[in-house]
Image 1 (cartoon, rainbow, N blue to C red):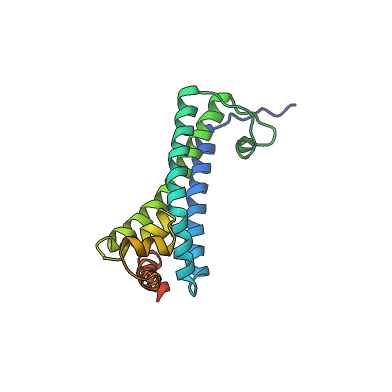
Image 2: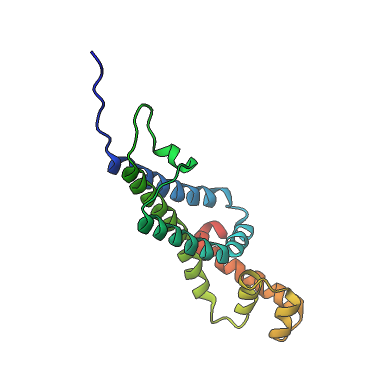
Length: 178
């Protein structure tokens, strides 16, 4: 007697993928806090350097999501492998639903990081040397260019940027930054 194929519950598969993506994003953030207890300054700088790229990536991912939803086409891709179960096949609609939910989870995780950085930046935006952070990490200017815009000495730029990065580290990592 042949085994009867069980119906595939694509919603459960897609929900599991979205939950796993969110869990991994949260776990990565928690691991980052534990890992950087002694190096929150460097980690804060990494996050600030990544901030403009994350903003661009979110927009790109939203465009890809819109194309997925509007186009409704799924091509064979390595990203589909995680949705396939041994001995079962997903329909194109089921794959599309899974990919849409996976992309939404990715966007949500990236948006969470951007929101955390933006909230921290909002805390220091009234500081007269805020330009040292925006200039260095967002606009990618040199210390000399930033110093000319303030105007001040490049060493003043570095000193005040360091002070502000330490403040941002507290907002991003809490007591681990102390």
